[in-house]
Length: 115
Length: 114
Image 1 (spheres, rainbow over the protein chains, first blue to last red):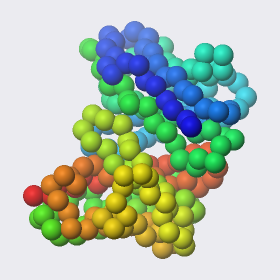
Image 2 (cartoon, each protein chain N blue to C red):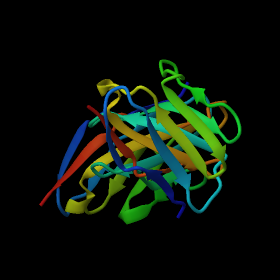
Image 3 (cartoon, rainbow over the protein chains, first blue to last red):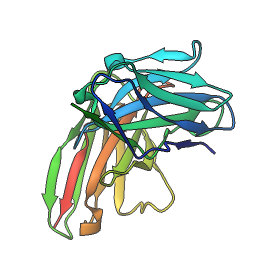
Image 4 (spheres, chains in turn red, blue):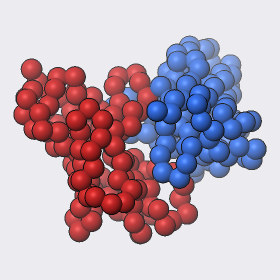
């Protein structure tokens, strides 16, 4: 079975400060990991993914995430937050060695960037 | 990047009627499409996985006869909510996979059943 945990329902950060949105995962094999962002009444937009290779992954809009196998984490980061980054963020995982073909999503983290 | 469209984006229907939602991959072929349901401020819940030309695989607790899924081609999947009731009101999101890794998501359809 595969699962994702986003321990924070809400993250608030001041504009210009660095932000971190936490994600930990559980899979029986090796993971594919993804971050998506959702704006109100919209579908999910892809931010970045980890498939293999460098543990630090750079994605859209200045976001990056670091894959940490020992801690089974894939935290999303951005050096300087913008008000427009305020949205709902989802981490997702798929076990590359399992039979499951679908993504499993975390519960989501609402990010609010304060001006 | 890959684009997935959904139609309609917003629909209101009366209780007891049926509603069809279309999901299209516009610039790629998707052998697998997924349908999700999302309640306000909650995560996406997978309803079913559909493969082109075969029957959909439904998640536990999802009524097959209520949520009819047809994946008629490599670029089109439809979800029909039959005999809709107010508790079916939700945000429905489809997703399409062009390759092994990524899934691309549609913009969602807001269904309100009165």
